[in-house]
Length: 409
Image (cartoon, rainbow, N blue to C red):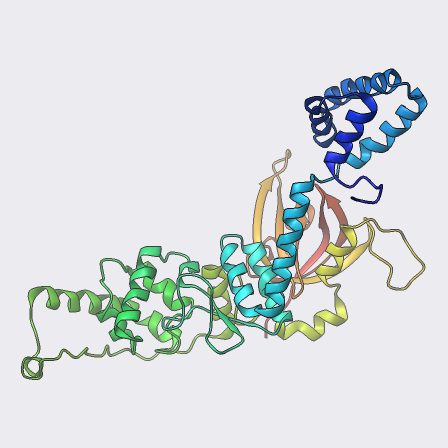
């Protein structure tokens, strides 16, 4: 059924049965030995296979040739049931992505919501598909990623925000479903039990932009103490059964507004930093956008480095030849993660993960460079880095020889 070409592990097992007299159990041991690369077990199976070939009156040289052909193939061959399952899943995914792109990407983001690297890849894919991914919103977000009705957009879920518990998210959504949208910060606090929302949680919701349609972000942060105090005092009045004079006659209860002090609006850089802090990645923009033209002229995209060094390359005479290990490159990127260690000599060296507008890569900072400018190797710093590309543990790296901070406008 594969036109004489062995494709599946089961076919390797069948060859061992028919040509070398293996039982089904012995053939499975052979499959395991080759697939798992268990050297001692592999040698045992080889000897048994060749002997079985000879006993079946097949020339030993033919048996040896078949073994030499089977061994490397079986290391990457699939079993038939898995191959069929993955093929069906691939077809189903392709169909859903083609015919229900927004719903599909929303479900995909939700399924991998705890893996920030995959979320970043999927959001990039959304951008290519012209699907906008919006920050979390108090009146539109659900717990997970969701489709914005009648629009080519996906909304971040409230449960993705750090320091915001799932129990609170459920209560926020349940209250909104029962009594409509939240109209103001006071209305939100009036309808939310202060026992389930503390200062840290409220700060995280504000910084993530959840209340942007109700009030400016920095204004809320500057008045955070006042907001929390108002919430507690309001709850005390509820618990004591006190009502306003006019509420008694009207039979309704009105929510008094919170008088907030003015504050300077949050800058775009601050908003992006808060998104990175609380959502794990940039949503509404990227700190490097303002440097895009400069970086295109002066640096190499990280994506090219990763693509070139993760496949087998040979040098060519082309001007656009693939990068090879040892080549010097210059990149412009923002630091998204840092790790500091001490060498055997007690000197500081660092492993930093950096990101440009295309991809991420790890950069190794040796003590000689770190000691020159230690203050620039911190999260959210934007650096211009020159170094040599290498592959360690199967992953591309940049071993930095020079680094300087890009001056922010």
